[in-house]
Structure formats: structure tokens, C-alpha cells
Image (cartoon, rainbow, N blue to C red; front, side, top):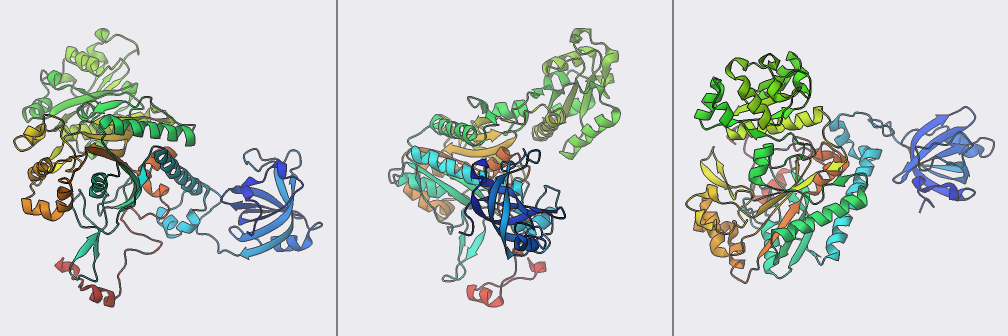
Length: 601
């Protein structure tokens, strides 16, 4: 080793010892006679002093040092003079008096500062990711990721799980997104696919008698990127035999609670994790991944709206839509401009508009003492005072609050009010930043109606078991079929999704049939699984928590790219390797592939 100790590990107990360090020059300060550098490695940094009277050769070399040069330093550890300690550094009470300095490598001027957390264009950061990863925040994130994955592995190993690797080159099967395809050279005209998830493979492992399986799995989906989505991502893939929902959810709750307590002691979770049905989550929060760090529950106001003279409400309800709203505490004092901003926010999320009802007056005044003059709203002429009071009572609003109301199709209203609720929570500082409000959402619909293509899709995927007694509606009324599906959500993000799986071939074929697959298509795309279900498949279920999204929540990041070492951009491009990129014509020829002109595609 070129060093005897890491820079960040030097402490007072090393005073008087001669050590050798190696790392990057984090910062250099020339005080005329003395030269100080902060030398940095993965464990942290320590101050090094070069004194021309004690080590003239080392001092002479130190004069040429610049930020991000790689250097090796030897010298004696000593306590810093009184008054010069740095309490913000773990090594802040000591320094190294250098007697030897070797420059191991010079560095060009970095494209951005490494020694400070300044705003840097993301494209530049990704192009020079090897420099970006030196920054303290990125280093800490990589360390946190390592510790989280190690904790998960150790936790599951202690509970009898086997880690089994599954293939990366598999058959193309529909699982909700487009596959990344890999052409076969040996069999021209045929393709492998990169797995969107190991779903069928882990079910086959249950048929194989593994009973308790997990894998830190790489998954690939050719879909439009988002801030919390990447073309390739990592998930904890987990499956168990002879279990029901409570077994899976209890295991996940125990693991996540223990993980937070062990690795993120400044965070805390709700205990036990709340469990909401899908119907309740949509009704109360407008989303199946609610942020439970604050209240502001939505309420259906359709019955009250039906009694008003407001034509928008009347037309919405006549067309099968709904009217819902929630209270925004203390916002009755909002100006016209601020209120217009809320309306624009709602319109940007698909709503036709937003009704705001400000309940002005002295906070704490009972609602029955509210006067018509205290109601400030564009719809005051069409809503009576009694109806305003009923709306306020329904959403638990008080004098001093504002009620935000949306009308329209249920899907649009829910997504608008859900986003608006989240915005209000952020604006008003209602969410405890240290709370990880983990909860389970259960009892999802098995099927979801695709309006554009006028057919049924699987809400999650086609392998989930219907709730007992609802199998009879698979063909006749798919909308009635609730499934044994569950999600883990936290602070407005979905962290995991899973289900109890179908382990009977006939039932699995019925679900495929409801999704529009013919017998031939079933055998072609899912034959390996369907055949396996006839060879003693045990009841089984599992879940697939996303590692990347978990790290986002645990580290407080807003972007999934900040928790991945070498991610793609928002447009699925790798600036570092300049991928995707063309390949040589002879490679395409060997594969029997021709590239069509773009206008022919």
C-alpha cells in the first residue's frame, strides 16, 4: 500500500506517530512561509503542513501542488496549536507535519469544483462523472448505497433466504414496457431481451423448491425516462413459498424498520406501518402512493355540489364526473395573484380550473358564525352560505383556511388534487423532513381499463392472484376483480410492489384471456411458466423493492440519477461513453441487421 492510514482516520491517538498518506489535494493554502494542504481520500481529509525549515525539499514540491493532484505524504502527526482546531472535521484536532512529498499524478483543472457543493450543470457532471463522484455528497451516497445493500443481504441471509442469480439474456415477454432487444449472432433474425424484471424466473424458482429467494437484480425497461426512472435500475427481487400477504408485508416492515434504525438513526418511521386499501388511498389522497407525513385529506363533495347553482358542478356531475376538495390551512389571506398561481398549477396538471373558497376572519371563529361577507370566492353567487359551511365542515376547514375544489373526471380530479396537496404540504412546511412515512397500500384492482385501446390491461402484472371469491368476475366483469396486490409507499413515492401469485394454470390462463391473449399467444410468451404450474407449484408470493428509489428517499435526493454511479440522462443518453452510438457496419452485417433510413421507420 502507498499509505499506512486513510486521511479521514487520523486522530489524536496518532499524535507522535509517523504515517504515510495518499490522496487528492482538496485545497491548498500558501501562508508565505508555511504551506497547508487538505489531503483527501474516500474516508475524509486531513490537514498537512509543509515547513521549509523542517523539510525544505517537501516544501519546494508543495509549492507546485494544485487542486486534485494526487500526492503521497509522510510525516509526524501532531495536535493542532490551540485555537486552530476545526470542530467541523473529524480530523480537525490534528495535523501532519510533512517531511516527504511525492506527486503521484498531476491533474488538469477540473471542469467544476470538487471541494465545494456548488450547482453544476447535470450534463457536465455526467460527462465527467469520475470527477463528480469525488464530491463529498456523491461519495456519501455511494457509501450509503453499499451499506443499504449489505444490510439487506445480511438481513435476508439470517432468515434463510438464498441469493440466486437469474439470466440477463432471456425471451421477450410483455411486462408493461418495451423490451431492450439483443440480436443473436448464432441464430440470425432472432433476439434475446434484457429482463424488465425476473418475474417469471423467480416464480420458476418457487416451483423448483427454493422456497425463499432474493436477488439484487438489474432490470431494464425501454420507457420514457422521468426524474425517478432510468432505462436500467436495481431492485431487491424477493419471493417466498407457502406465504400469504401478512407474511410478506411483516418481513418487509421488519427489514425496513431495522435498516432505518441501523443506518439512518436521524430518521424515523411510523410503527406499525399503516395499511390502506387502494380505494381508501385514492379516495383520501387521490393517489396510490400518498405522502402520510401530513393530513390534508381529500373529501368527496359531489352531493353538496349537486345542490349548488354552479353550472360547472352541475355539468360535471351530469357527465359522470366528481367534485372533491381539501383544506389549505391558513391560506385565506392569499392574494389574488397567489390564488391565480394555484389555479394555474391545477390547470398544468390537467384540470379545467380550480375553485378556491377563502374563509376569512378571525381564526378560531366557529363555522356557524361565518358570514357571507367572510367568504371570498369566484363562485360565491352560486353557492349559499349553508353550502359553504357544509363544504368547510366536510374537509375539516376552519376560519382562516382556504378550501380548494376541483371538478371533472375522477382520474383528472384525483391527480390534480393529489399534486396540489403535495404542493401545499411543501409550501406550508407540514412534512417532518426526518419522518419516513412508510405504509402499505393493498387490495389493488387486478385489471385497469385502457381507454385509448379499449381493452383491459393488468393494473400491476398478470401473475397476481385475485381475492378469494372474485375469480367468477374475470370474464364477465373484470372491473370487480380486486387482487392480492400490495405496494410499499413512502413520502409520496412507490418503493416496492408485489403480490401473492397465481399458482394454478387454469386460473392463470383465464387472467391472460381477459387481457386478450389467445391460447397460441399464451403458449408462445408464457409457455415455460404455464407448464411449470402443472408440476407441483406451491402457493407463493413476493415483492420487488426498488433500491434506487429507496436511496432517493433515505438520502433526501430528488433525482434518481444522484444515487446511481453511472446513470443515463433524462433522455436516456450516457454522456461519459457517448452511448447509444452507431456500431461498425461489419458488426451489423454479421448479425444480419440493416438500419433503415429514419424516414422509413
